[in-house]
Each structure stands twice: as structure tokens, then as C-alpha cells.
Length: 330
Image (tube, rainbow, N blue to C red; front, side):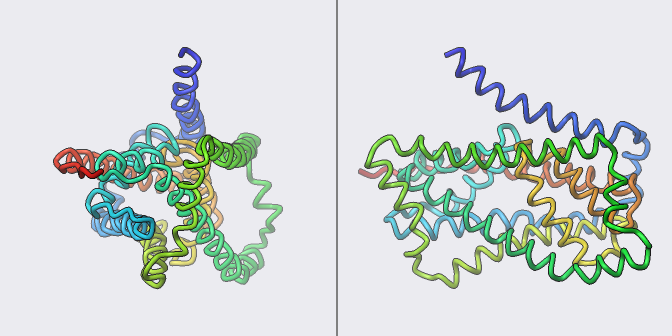
């Protein structure tokens, strides 16, 4: 019992310590007045508010896709329950990284009487598809940006080696630690699948969930939802560039590079990627010519506000869910 409590506490405390350490290192030299100014007079709240619908739609598209994948297995949860479960899953992952996937399957089990193991299978399938989407985005980004990077280095006289040379020892240490944690997270997620293989029945349900995507009634709609998720994520991030003069002129491709790098950074198990995401996106912005301080303030403001949106949606999901009657079936 003590060991279990210690393990659970470690999953919460260690990510918080890592996130806090990276954030402290990044912002240790920034004055509080600079932060207040970044949230106030120097920021356009209009563009920030315009980005909110896309942040919401990303989660709604995920719920729509999830419902579609569950239906071929005879599971027909109500759409609003799926949406609220996704809202809550994102918010809960701010406290314990990666717990959201398990929680949303549990919510559907409790409110809609769906099969938990099948739900887990669909979530794993979603992760595989999302990983493929990110890898495709990364490939497109690299191919599109090679000429730009070559031109940038040519005009400025800066080499990639010279840019990497600007990293401090602490910067390299953060990069190394984040890389190791990403690998550990991948290994942990794979190993946890063994938990669902204790019985043949559970394994069969998990397999059904994994391969459910092959039987969706409308593959075109499934593809639309998948693209919609990532297009919404990107626009949710890209529109925030117009909130600040230092990033407003960078353009859509620069935002795409920062977005893709940030997607890989959030694999590090910290609350909503706090710390690694800040460090990664800030590094990209500096590469595009944004000053260190403005890049740091940009990622601080954007991440803070977008995290608060996730919290607000999670609270809404909790209230809406408990006002929803449970489905009863044999």
C-alpha cells in the first residue's frame, strides 16, 4: 500500500519538479514588470481570444473521431459525454501527465457502459494515428524550410554549428534530460500495454479497439476529423503570433516549425509540457531572430493562457457530466 502511494506521488511530484526547474532556469533573469507588461500593454487580447475556438474545436474533433471509432464495436456513447470526457482528460493530465487517456475511458464506462478495454484499444490507435500525423507534419516542415534555413544562414553568416554553440551548458543539459525522458515515456507507455493482457478476454477487447479504425463507416469523415484536430491545434497556436509585435511578422511557416518542435517537446511527461515546451519553442523563435527575452515572454504568456483554457474546459466537462444521466443497459 505504501509503495503504491509512493509510486502515485512520484508520478505527480517528479514532473512538477522537472517543469519547475526548467522554468526557473529560463526565467530567473526576467523581471516581474516585464511579465506584467507582456500580459498587458504589449499584448493583443483580440488575437488571443480569436485563437480560443480552435483550441476548443481540436478537442471536439477528437471526441467526434473517438465516437466514430467506437461505433463499429457496437459501442454507441452519446456525443456530449464523449466531448466532456475529452475535456476532463486534457485537464486531468495537467495534474498527472498521461492519466487522461485512462480517465476518459473510465468516464465512458461509468456513464455510457462502454467496454473499458475496447476504449483503451481505440485510444492506443488514436495515439498511433496522431504520431503518424506529427511525423508527416515534421517531414513537410523540414522539406519546406530547408531553403529558408540555408538562406538565413547564408545572409547572416551564422552556421548551424555557430547557433548550437550559443547553447549554454545548462541548455544542453535540459535538451539531454528532455530527450532521455521522451524515450523513457515511450518505453513506459509500451510496457503498460501488458497490464491489459492479463486475460484472453481483455486482450481480445484491446485488439478489437486497436483495429476498430479499419471498420469505420465513413473513412473520409475519419480523415477529416484527424486533419481537423491538428489543423485546429496549429491555428490555436499560430494566431497567438499576432498577439505580439516580435512574432507577428514571422509568418505561418515559422509558426509551423515552432508548433512541430513543441509537439515533440510535450512528449516529456510534465504538466501540459510545461518547461520542455517553453524551452523548445523559445529556441525556435530565437532561431528566427526573436530576442531571448521576447521569445521567453511569448512562450510564457501563450502557454499560461492556453493551459487556463484547458482548465476551464475541464471544469465545464465535470459540471456537464454530473448533470448528465447515466446510461443503463444490460
